[in-house]
Image: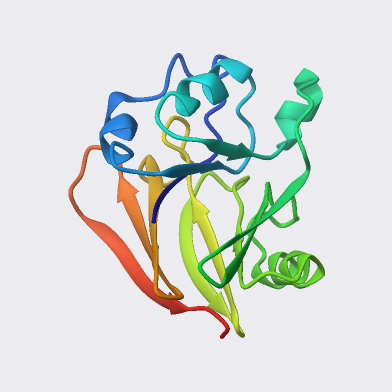
Length: 174
């Protein structure tokens, strides 16, 4: 299964639209996860035209009055995936994110909030952040594509407009 992962689109608050390169990166995905800060449900509807989309509420979504779940847990092929905006301070603190994942009881935690992509293993948990395709912070605009097959997860950061990416293979609990 191919899954597109996106976060921090901030449309129309800070950006006009999702870049076309995101749609190209997501053209074969079967599912999309949005880790918050959509700002407008129009983003959700646009992504749902590509594939079923799971989305959680970010801090700016809350201020805009969007009623979205704070967290989601999705189990795919033996891997338990948590989706949370990741509002920890300092932003991206891996120990605090690990504790969120432990509280959720997940193998993989997908967050946003930093606007910077990362793939990090902390203990037995995999922490993923797709960055932002529209308003990155001190990094290139990015999204992520996950491939889950035979209880394995491959995570690829896709830099928008570039062909290079960072990859990691993660084997879920059996």
